[in-house]
Length: 247
Image (cartoon, rainbow, N blue to C red; front, top):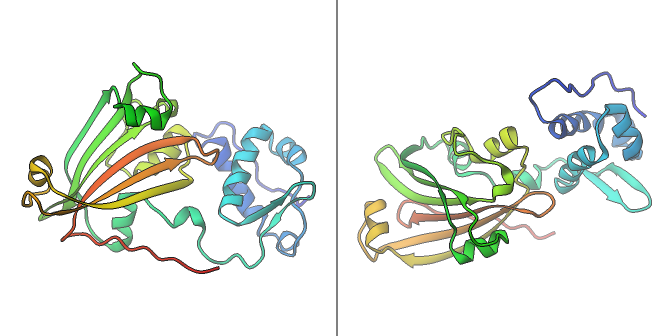
């Protein structure tokens, strides 16, 4: 096992699994692991870091998902070869991160937080029994000159959100740093609709004008549901681009 000159800080506010993930990123840069040597087994590595196997596995799962590590049952875990492209987890971003990457300053025109009884569709999505409330986040956002997107987000109660979070910060950073919840998978449905009276008023457009509706379903590494998100975009102010590569 490569000599570790850094350790998990159990007094740090940074979650243990994130510390373990950062440590593993440094560990796999070692020449012997780059050349194909198997990483230490989970039992030994967890003992070395003084953390549980479940915590270590959470960190490893993220790096496997990013295709930085390859795990083979009965063999072990090693560094993926030829990995120099950005990871899968970075192929999708929160809206704030998307706009920051494009260099577009964003303004919040409305921001509302409430606890609501979800409708049946959302309750089924979260597999919740009736009578249980969920946190709802509503934001009307856009450039300085005017709004172009209206968001409704619903969060699974399991996460432990309180509604006191600073939602001016990137959403998925809040989930990770404050609630130990890492968004790994985003599944999306995109369709075209016509603006009704309420949406036309929100987006400052004409009733019946084209609206892009994006439904985003967000999961953690264990494929547990985190967020149900609806985004309504003015079609003349926003272009959604998808890039696919054949492998």
